[in-house]
Length: 260
Image 1 (cartoon, rainbow, N blue to C red):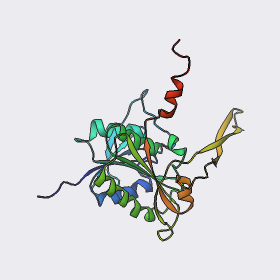
Image 2 (tube, rainbow, N blue to C red):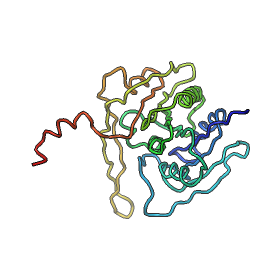
Image 3 (cartoon, rainbow, N blue to C red):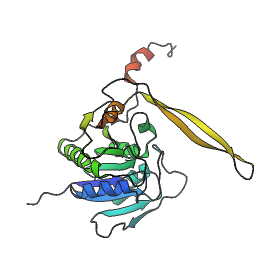
């Protein structure tokens, strides 16, 4: 009896035509039955946004007629894509959701803003094991070949071992050649933040506008963080949860005179 191949949902935030998702699809086709539901345009930095005040469109498309996967282009956010896949498109719950490969880092605090990781988190909320993959290269012509080996290894391990309820994986891959990447490190999220600035300008009509810019500040000197691992040439894997409760503060908060 032939064993059924795992059903894998693929999405991203850079858009359905981005090179990163094309590389991810190639690897997933080696492992299972692939269905792609991805934004029809770039949705970077959307975080966990959903579409509630306008209509959503989700149309079947053929991006590569020589590839076996089914693909759908969605007018919404990465989270919308996962919701649409789970509620409208798929006839059964996927065995795995993979998001990416993102063009750029989603390490440390970036996970909060990331559409890539929010799609993975939404899958986790739906009870689907999920992984977000990112390459530390923002260029649209980035070389994803060195990433493929690690993507495949991590995916195969998740399919074999599963993930705890409420936990997804945040995987970041350094911008290095295949021979330069040293391996995989299991990490915690680094304590880092952005110091943001707004570049104020004036358009030809005299109206002021702003460009957001900023500097990434890593205040964490630990050698068990994603930032440290990436800086040392390792692929970082951070188990990430969507429970934002500060459990360690509950006991102290209960001592405040809030119940009087």
